[in-house]
Image (cartoon, rainbow, N blue to C red):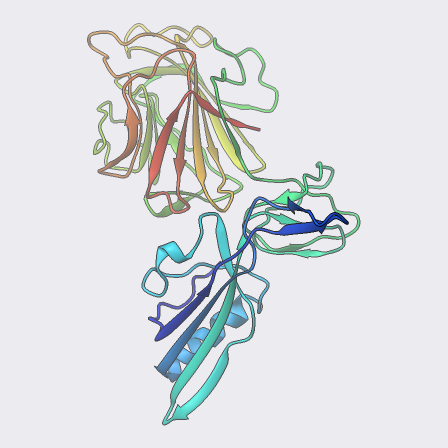
Length: 367
């Protein structure tokens, strides 16, 4: 999904899209209209670049080849195209081959025509589908509408699984329950001891997750109620700038953990944190007073999601006051709240490069 080269067009022509509508005329002269979709189609854009250098002309042609003509979708840099010319939830495709005129002395005029399509595509078996679709999962249910990125071919023996993440209102308990877990099926128990100021690598994720503009395939859960990216941290302080790493916080402070479980699957990486409110006199494994499950979801081509679910969650004491839930870069909070408590579920929703996040309370991710 490489962006179009950063070039300022000499002229642009926009043809707005329209909703697909079928009109039925009766013998009495009345007409009935049926709207056959929920998204506009037929939006066109023509950009003309005059007096461009050979290097810029070749950059456009290489981009056209890289998008496999009109097969792969892409976006535009804001210097090339105003943001309001791209409808929310749409991506661009080449509508035809670039038209090139060699003016003189290696100066060119290039005209390109594009079309915008919604990110959902209905695909029939035996057809090819574009990069707005996710991976194909044998044996999964065919949902019809496909979202996401990687390009693939659909064969008569392949079934499809939609990868769009349904974000729902409501509160969901941790998958293994509100108290210390007793069912470990499908999970790896990587910590089983009471530890203070500890961190551990949770890696080998089956996708790349982006935070603060950098892609990661691992994080470092800590005993102090954080998950850091890039490296681990023993820091017991908790603020947007401490520790100085991209991070997620869930009731952070000078705490301890007794058990940690990890799990990865199709498009997600999850860990379960079982800990105590303080670092001193912590309970033995299996008797933790704070339970949280954190899930990092693969981007669906539009959003990334971080899900936080709490079960038992002992109230902060005077010496351990934090009730915050927060996602931040190494120095700046993107989104946060100070009301983390027992039996809650939260979702952080971020853009594709993880540089903008919104916190949604009383929400969870279906699937």
